[in-house]
Every structure is written in structure tokens, then in C-alpha cells.
Image (cartoon, rainbow, N blue to C red; front, side, top):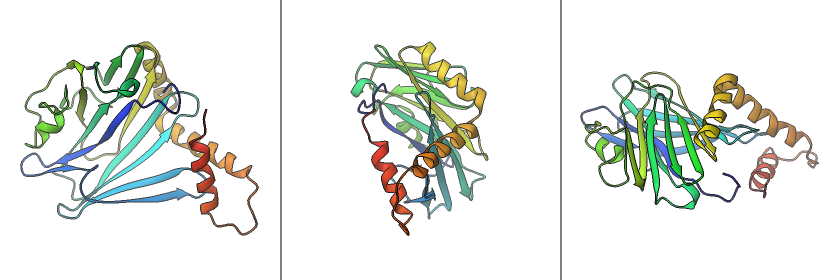
Length: 238
């Protein structure tokens, strides 16, 4: 945002702990695999399995077709009754991590830098959460000790992060929206909230299937042809 070559996010992933004995970073640990869900659309399922603690983090992603919003849906399978899942966001607004400010307000988190805003719908305002400084006792550092002992509503300016707990035992969604102001980012999230997350996934899939239907594919071509063409289309200069 606002263009395909602009980098605003360094990391967004999930951390898992039982609250007492282990810490698991789904972006660095476990056995990762992905599965194409539809050979006519850029729809896939990312799985990260922890064979030691017998659970799997499953994530799906969709982009809104008409506004700067990305929807991330995740859930756990396996032995999950005792587990706590946290989302961990490291922003990189306007191509740099410096000079950012982050805070929580209600059920949303925010990061700003100049005229660029990132708003995140966390799904709840009741879970454990904290804004922090990356590498200096933020949520990632604290969860290495299995719990958020110190919780702060805001942090910055600096290299900031946001960490929040997802509701236990259910599929959770996190919507990330960008805008030139807080109001613009909030407005994009409000539209998604009105439409519903499933509608975003359905429209995203249907848009790619429409594009695939317009391709001139050779007879008997392998399904990967469509997926490969869409990967190229995805990276096209907008």
C-alpha cells in the first residue's frame, strides 16, 4: 500500500504456548507445508505442524477486491484445549521500521507513520495484548516465558510491534487495512465487517476464477498452468 512495490509489513504470524512450559513460533519452528485449494484461483492453505506438542496451525489468506484489506483466518487442530494462540505483528510502514507508533483502542490495533496507517481488527478487546518495542521486551520476548506479564496500550515512536491473544478453541480472523489516515483505514475495516469475512474469501476466489476462465489455455493443460499464470498476474504493476 498504496502500490504493489511498497513494503509495509515485516511479519505477521502466530505464537503458541501452553502458558507454562513451551513457546512455539509458527514462522520459524515446526514442519511447514502448503496446499492449493483451487487450481483456478490463488487460494491455498498454509499448515505448520508441531510434532512435539501435537498441534497444527492452519492459515488461509484473502485480499479484498476493492479496498486495501487483507483477511487472515486461522485455527488449530490436534491437542489444543490447553493452548493459547497469539498474533504477532511487526509493521514496516513506508519501507522502514523506524519512527512508527502503535496502540490499541477497543477491538482494534493501530500503527502509524506519517500519512500511512495500518488498522487491525483483532476480534476482541478482552484478551491479553500489548504494544511494544521490537527486541526490547515486546510480546514476542515476553511469550518466551509463556505469558504477557507487562501489557502496554501504546508504544512509539520507534520499531514497534503489536501482540494479542486470539480466542481459544475457535477459528479466528484478523483483518489488516491500510489508509492515508486512521479514518480511512477504519472505514475499510468497517466495510469488511459489514460484508462478513466469508464474503471477502468468496469474492476473492471468484475474481481469480473469472480471470482463469478468460485465459487461452492449451487443450489438456495441467492445472498448474492456471495457478502459474495467476502468480504472474498477481505481481503485475498495478
